[in-house]
Length: 274
Image (cartoon, rainbow, N blue to C red):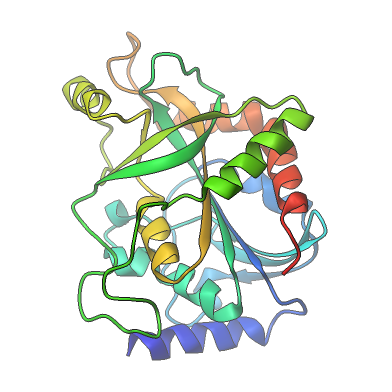
């Protein structure tokens, strides 16, 4: 059944596009501006795609754009889904399986995250080296379809070392100094308590957010290579003497958008043609 839904969604998208996407991009809160730089792009609202859920969060537009970005054929998700919206983990990850069916082999996941590492500052861009799944869910739970991937996928290198090295190199070329660290994925939608942040710091997390983990797991299950980039949009609870807000997340994303766009464009342009 799941395979049929993926096929129907992929077939619908394939019938609307003129390029074969090889790279997938998922844009986090406030980062959708990158989509405006795409060329010859077809835009497909999620509501039109069979079996696609709908996004309900401010800063997530809810549409696919398929075209060329930095000279490469790209499928871009302008807005993603979260379990805190009420979706199951496998529903959140459904678009990743659709990407695989369309031929995507490299996936760039972006998000807005709270900084836990005391050396970080709002506006920093962090390459995700690994993650800690505190969401209490895994998108692969249930019967395994070998067409999607193996029953027990290896997660030793959930986030590609090769792609991180490429991102650092391309960032340096344009004066963008990427941070690097471990991303803790939590369910949300409430922000974490200061005690929870202290716990996550002890466990080795450098940043925390409410997305990315289900998508990364599903991508690796399908054999897709993953690069994760967090925009440190605020310092996490207890790090500073002020409350947290989604408005601060959006404001920081707006402030760093030009740097973010330049960095991602360099990375995409440097990816090898498949």
